Length: 103
Image (cartoon, rainbow, N blue to C red; front, side, top):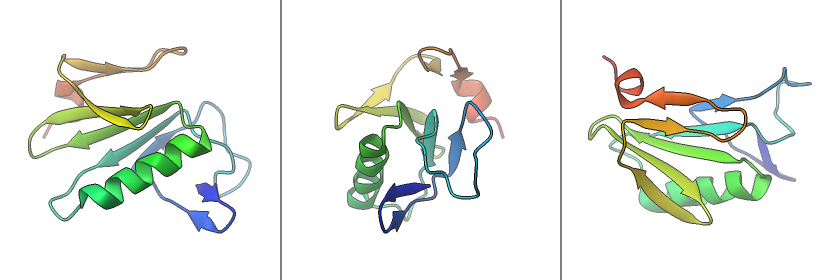
């Protein structure tokens, strides 16, 4: 997806509410998801998340499969989701921790 005039990012998963008009997302998806690997640095992750937020992505999620942790990124802050599910606003999309980290 295009996050700037000369910048593209590829989230691990993104959810749109309608079919994109082109192969490169020009509009913000409804959800952008980053799935952490052991090689990810915090600096690069935060840089990506800030670009998604600046693009207007309303739901930015981060999943850590090794620790089975879920996070949201909002207002330039990464917050752990401690409950059993992660949820968007309207329209409501909900995923449980079990669904996300199923082997």
